[in-house]
Image 1 (cartoon, helix red, strand yellow):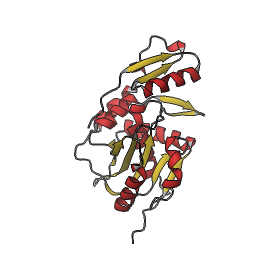
Image 2: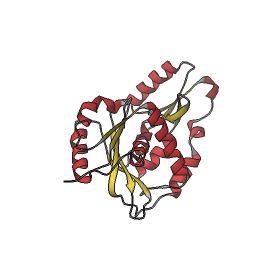
Image 3: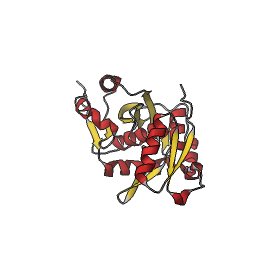
Image 4: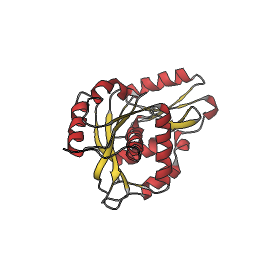
Length: 230
């Protein structure tokens, strides 16, 4: 079921802490805030949409795209811990990279059981998550999964973000036109991190794309070997 878009609210303040606090309050109330310092006053959030990424994503749709073989999974949770998404990345029969949403539900105790089920059924190369994000609260349970785990540090998450951006623009990632991913790509915003950037988790509608980027990074990590199935 497609989630209805939340009403957008612009939050403008020079103090980043104030912007973040107000944004969290608004998200808790069901709004979709965009935060700006005063120099952005009067510039509506659509100006920050990565239109090149949106167009490339739309052009890579294939209703027949189907994952085959061993995938990689990734999980993401909103800052408010009200939504959790599991994505999968892998290749189809033609060797094309494919990303899809496996689960998208209100956050809750279902996560570990569902991931265990997916691991036992699909034998993934890895299960990835942002080690500095909300999913880290489940680290002990995730470490017990019957699969290799990949908690990614900030540098790796930034690399995964750039990797996703480059592959999508190159037309190297295909998908089955899932509204959740399409909405996420349009909602994605960047934020600075060290000497680079990563996708901003403060945009809750972008959550499926954030998870997709981590799954794709884990899948294309050539140091990972297929699991041994007995």
